[in-house]
Length: 123
View (cartoon, one colour):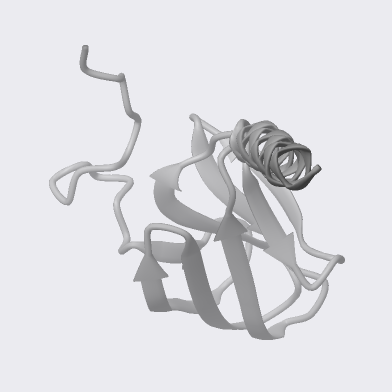
């Protein structure tokens, strides 16, 4: 099943790069873009919003804490508190914590069962 995306194509007249300010003048540049991490440097005339040409989904976390994630056409938009700086975004799938907790709970049960079996054979 193909998931619908709203990423801007380079032929779209709204496309101005992979990261760009949308309500102020200036520049934004993606420094690092990996599946779980996104680093952007920016220099704006005034603090404003930066559109990043990737889908907004639950799990994106912006830092430092004064950067707010917003949705614009299902694209990632970050509100900056300063006119110049760097922001770092990370992506953790929403189900990751419950999956990790389930894994470690199962590991704990297996370990306790193994300890019980080893001790019961020594008696």
